[in-house]
Length: 136
Length: 180
Image (cartoon, rainbow over all chains, first blue to last red; front, side):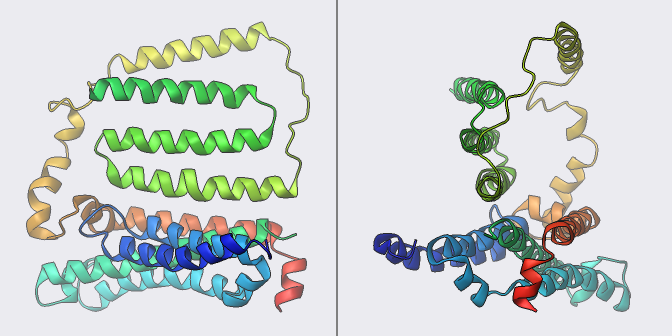
């Protein structure tokens, strides 16, 4: 798709918006529909569009597959670590009440952290899958 | 009005499902699968399950269709002509199973029935207590991330494990040589 000028220009406009929307879905999941799963998929979709328009090699330079393998594991580790932090702070596993003096702020912080872990893992795994299937 | 929309959506779903089983061209089948997901998402929106609809639209209609298309780029887009002749044993077996399933739905409470058991088990507690305990306006998030944190942890683990499995099966060779 090297010489499709219209597609390239439109994609340059749309990709940042897709990524921004992914962050909106990620961090607005407490207030509206959305959350880590959907945000991760939308984030991956932005990069897949980039790969379709500008070529897989360019996208692999922006986000190398090795990085995705690390971030995929890191997302789950963030989730597991949030659970362990609950134990270390004197609560149960995945008990967010102990994260702050006020249980509600603790719950908000815990939900934010684990949703972030879910989002990072989902985005990394989806992009890794796409990289493998899109290999020429 | 809502019933009419539901009937139309379900009719389309049935038509698309039949078309998917009949059509040999895999590219068309993949596009129809995406449409099936999108229509299911619309159906979920009309049932006020916007979170599930969002996931269905993003995962089912979006990424899955794309991954199927990239797989088709690696293989052929035409299904091999297999044995397609009518089998009466299979037809009887499928009809009996279908009849049993329909018989099973007769006992299910009506959609939106307030006296259904599912609304009286633990859902009541979530609905009344979560604004005080979690304080998150979207109750789906508070159930998914806090009350049911273990389930979501399991789901995330499943996604990572599935990704690792595909990487192990297909990701060796060319990709490793290029990146390492």
